[in-house]
Length: 341
Ligand code: SF4
Image 1 (cartoon, rainbow, N blue to C red):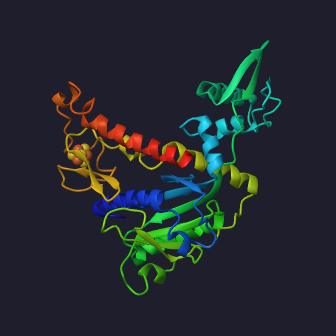
Image 2 (tube, helix red, strand yellow):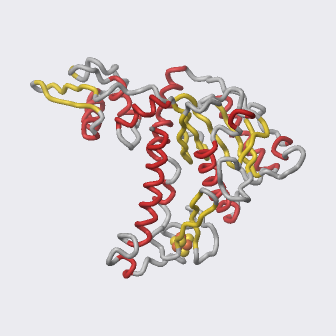
């Protein structure tokens, strides 16, 4: 079990790794990038945190994208498409057709597909019309092939022997399922001749990133101590492609700044502090970087923003809590727009 203090520092470390990945992926660029990774400037990537499957959740996920495909994905809106919507959108025809003709027969009743078609139409990601009592659909655009590679990173700032043991099991699962194309561990650089992480019993397929955030977060704050090898899928290719696309869609819709949805930026003690090129939550009452787990409805130190902060447009409409949410939301959107460019 992690102590609350280590859980807090792991949360902040996770935000730092996510921001570094946004700025600096792939590590080392042309000189020491992973041999199986993209090294040219014509790639794009998006970063998300706490994503995975029922069996496995990764701390940081990087989706390497085809830039053209990513631009085309923007036509389907900012929100993620879940598996039901993907089923509709990926198979919707260019010409009007009764929905059962182009969509593959599902393993479940057609009424669920019909429901998903309505949902897709409400989201504006397909067009529908009725012909007699039949629902017809047509695509708004071809759904692009935008996902190149999925990279999973586990964040362990202090990689001691017991943490390494737990991590070894998790990474072995990643290696076995091959859902991600490469798995990495990120850990704080110690300056030792041989980084301690390399002495632990981690699977050799997993890469090791060493980070140095003492000067704040920027794109050069991590380096490669060990390159990963590409993971081979053990599930069927169709199953793997579908699961990967669902994960990539979740990453697209959520990014990594959604932690503020569950935190309390409407508390008078909630601040954002600059850490290099990262804005990181700070609790003025506890005088520390609070974790999302602590900064929640159950926090005994919570105090609402004074009403005066919410009136007369002080100094940002709706008070600092709304301003902080808006700031993080607009940063996420700007980053996505930069990658879509
Ligand atoms: S006092 Fe509690 S709710 Fe308020 S910012 Fe600090 S951790 Fe969050």
